[in-house]
Image (spheres, protein in one colour):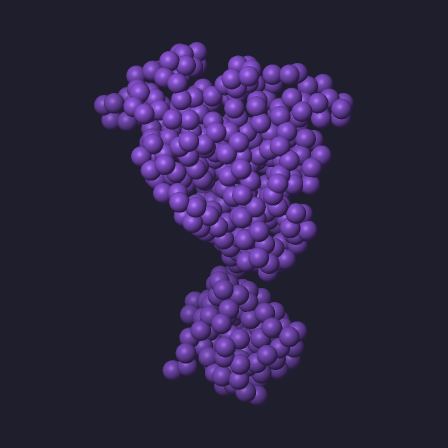
Length: 432
Ligand code: 4AD
Ligand code: MG
């Protein structure tokens, strides 16, 4: 038996005989030679089947194998700089595991709806593999960063009795005899309890928003990482967000060069994501819009186009702080210098990718927080546990949430969030 190896390890087997297992990516023939491109999830390699070197049965197998058929192939590894991956296999034996019927995704162009309908197969294509490998690396960089900076991973519930980020985007369900329950919009409120127990925590998991908007920046199910830190004010929060983003982007740049190249990503723009990032107030951002001829009303939230216009002024992510409290969540602390403003920060990615981080310092005063809950018509009885955090050893604290798919989308240079997650959920799509 020849050792079964993965394509990524072929460099260790030059001139040796190995077995590879995988699927047929592509095939080309020229007379007595067949060139089969095998993919195994770790890479692509060309298997050369020469009629004179194999039995009739093997040559026949190479002839009838179809796109995406699974097969096993044995041969000698050769260095071949011109071939995909830099190596090729001089085939001795080839057996088919399962012949694929007419594979629906052919090398020709397909419409996007067709591709998402076939998402379970589409994820096999080169571009999708590159994107999802980058996603994995981003997730690992996120975990590494927090694990190495003294944060404890803290898993909040997904089924919750109340809203966190406004009541208009809640997914509702009947919860046995207890009435209505909701899919979480954010782990933050629970994260705050964790920060009071551990000092610094992060939550990382799926979150849900019944977004009525059909934009390229919105999913109804997306992943969010949310650090929460006791004794951090807004400035500490921004320092952390900046260091964190720099780490994630630079790590992916270093470790996923090949995939970024596959996506034809202009990486010079990512190289530039180094501290310090510009910090501007909401007021400054409004000035930028006005200078660009936008009729923007102070007090409104920025729309996607506004965010793009603001971020165009900078060649790095820009941190916009101190938003009008009216457009922000109930739990944000007001600016002691101007109670109309919340101690909030949004980080806008460059190149028109919009808000990737939203965060704030939290209201830590019990009475003020009760007032906010009332002003927002939220049911106080469900927030009593949250108010306890202000009753028993309240401290200044802050945190933020980074949207994973928006980050993947930006780093990969994608046009739409739907390619940034294996199975996207959007207002008009919950399949496959
Ligand atoms: O700004 P948001 O709503 O903030 C929160 O949820 C806070 N509780 C976070 C915190 O302070 N712990 O959402 C945070 C980020 C956004 O900046 C965006 O990147 C992403 O989550 N996000 C979405 N991503 C995809 N689809 C959606 N519908 C999203 N809504 C928010
Ligand atoms: Mg936000």
